[in-house]
Length: 213
Ligand code: DX5
Ligand code: ZN
Image (tube, rainbow, N blue to C red; front, side, top):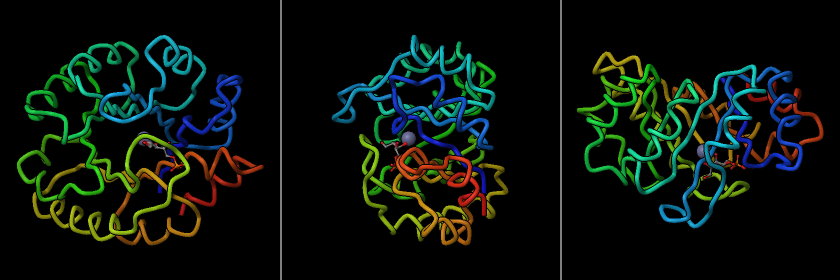
């Protein structure tokens, strides 16, 4: 299992150190939550701050857009060269077009599904994606309770990926900890995002390792 600590739960007053600490702690990606105050009822960071995160991070960035105007934000964050740029299917009229746009920047495109969205919606997109991010909380805040129906959804998505011969990875975001990571692994999940579990622990290295099952 790959682990992507979400810096949403980091101490923003010491952001550089907090990013360095999870990179040194052996994480695989650094997850960055971009919220616009419209798609979700919270507001986080823009490209100015993420640029300094990119500078200090020794691991690839995984940027999760929770915004209304996806194309605008893709153009804003693509120059920072994240590994993944993911957008919510619920907020995009032309997902296929946006996937191509992200790929044209040389970035891996990913789609995010909210807890209510069906994985079957991806039938005709899955071969164009490098990753699918399944939300296991309602997007907007860290520290929420894990919604366990994501486990069944991940297993169904895995079946679709195998059936379509797609190389897309499955990532799960929200409420992940050492108690549910094994069930996610068994369902076919490749990457977990964890914010409060890692940053709320006294020992980031140990918390990261406990998720690399
Ligand atoms: C929620 C964000 C998550 C969040 C996860 O909208 O997408 O990445 O930081 O935090 P935890 O792990 O605390 O649920
Ligand atoms: Zn996220």
